[in-house]
Amino acid sequence: MRTAIPRMSLALAGLSLLMAAAGCTHAPEMQPPPAGQLQEKSLSELKSGLLGNDAAFRTLEADCRAVLVSPLIRQPSRLETSGKLYLSKPGKVRLTLGGPGKTYLELVGDGTSYVVRMPALGNMTYSGRYGDGIEYNLNRIHFMPDDLADAFDLNSLLGGKSLVLRAYPARWEFVAGETQLAPVAAPVWAIDAILVDDKREPPVSVHSSILIDRTTEQLLRLDKFHWDGSLRTRVWYVSMGVTRGPDKNPVRVPGELVIWYPPPLENTFIRLALHNRKINVPIPEDTFTPVERGLPRGGP
Image 1 (cartoon, rainbow, N blue to C red):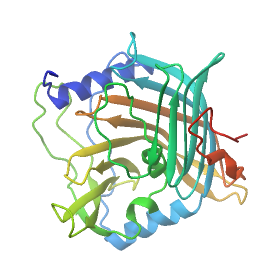
Image 2: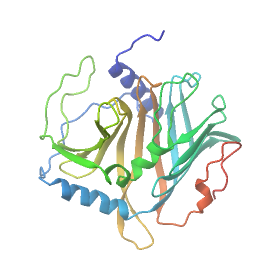
Image 3: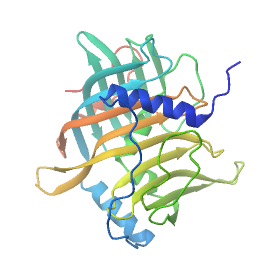
Image 4: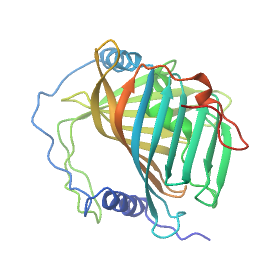
């Protein structure tokens, strides 16, 4: 029987390890929101801006530094590594992380099916289809290709779904429990994507929720949910950068992400910092071909 541990404590422990691995000695305190004009925008205006930027880059190639923190990694419970990310919309993704002579992780998805291999982490291997439900597995470090692809492709979250907009004020107080975080937060919009299926119970559910800063319009966080309303994945956009493609037009592209698989999964955190980002460059199609036996085919 697993001992029940408060989710906030587990999350803070994982974040503390992640910050330490990234060179920070402690998790930073939340600061008062920066001064800025609080904006009032409609749902259609926000959606148009998000999807317009999304459509401006169809492919992405980047070098990356990664930190993985998971209780399933042998001591120490974190791994620092580097690798390469390839993305082609909609939904195609390949990430390879390794070290000298080792492949720690390789995940590849073609927009429909995926394969994940972790040769140096207990030789974990699993595969499936995008949108599959995920459950606790003692022998699996969760890192799902469709969650990574969605973090870069908001059209996959907003397109074809009913949307609800919520707007929060400039700052508010909340009960922080035993944490040391200051009880202030930036003003945000939240866009919830709603799914309806009369054959399910409940028939209506929140598929995902995107948080946006109301003074800068920068993405802050993405939450994805299981049908029963429980949190599947949380993605923090630590930084956003401006990248120019072959047409020289500026496009906002995530520069650093933190992806969290919360309890009742294994409480895994993945921090990805992207460098040398190139957008709208040709990527061979077989880069994204899942192969269940052996390494995925193709790829530069």
